[in-house]
Length: 215
Length: 215
Image (cartoon, rainbow over all chains, first blue to last red; front, side):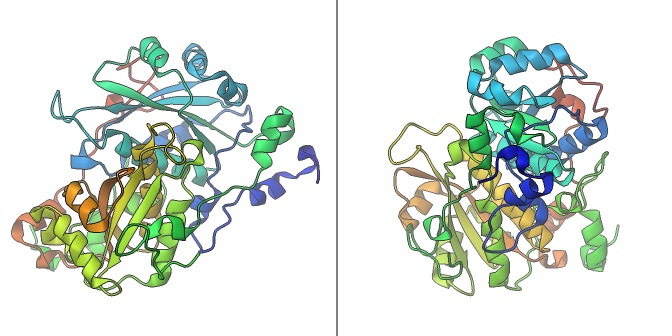
């Protein structure tokens, strides 16, 4: 096996393509949660497109329960360091190279103090995936993290009780795998795996696989 | 104002484009929760691509907590009618024209009987948005519904207690707005609205709008 630093950038891009059985859009196929971020900053014009993409996601009753705390090394270094400090140490290890970190937040109720929104996290997921796909189209990489101290992030960014921190989103360009610690290189180079269709697409009743979508 | 049946298909496609301030991918801009589905069936090849797209979404610990019960008028009419019967009457009114209905289901725990997965709904959202974007690329329309009887869907499709019904997804081609009841025509033709950036993208602390992304 070649060492990581012997892979060319193109080889790595190809390696990381989703191993699909049926064809899908290239920007969906290229999406990948990398650990290897470059220090290169993200252009403001691109950041704007990411949040525009998130903005147009669908949501239950068009509530748009998503909010984002945007921090970038270049524009808001102190905020960036504060958000970085909320991450679990094993995430800080690689995420500190990403030039942009975003805290995604969910509004827990409809309107102002209305009934509980059962779809708050779900709809934040819809918006975040839109952001991720727009990022991929712009040749950026996105890595979502649930591994952070939500209570600490609430305190440090003054998130009100009506809202809940959901994830920290690392955004940036693809970097150099050889710069990662050995253990992370291994994770980065491991084959990407997904469940076969027969395990998650059913017909008629639970667990009954459909003939329409063979594995 | 023109009557709905005087709009050409192209005019309607343009009308429904998201009114973005910053440019985004065309397939994100075209995505729209229509109420006007055509009776035209969805090709099996296209359905396969939709679930392939969902399959490659990211998820917490790569748990892939999503499952889908796929019903189609053509292939599984009885299952389709059963899922249709779970929808609230106001959703049945338009959703019954969509040739495909899918029940999205979330696995509530990691592994087999592990700890609770806080991200189950969120990650189903990620997968469903991938499916939706692939559908849009294939000139299909998707409309997500939370308005259905989850207990009834659990019973009718034998969903185990370890899993929770999330949404019903209507999939099909764009139909004729003039065929909709007057009230739904009005909803379909209403301008699409989203919150301005200053209300949901913050910097430094909660509620503090960022200069990076002007409204």
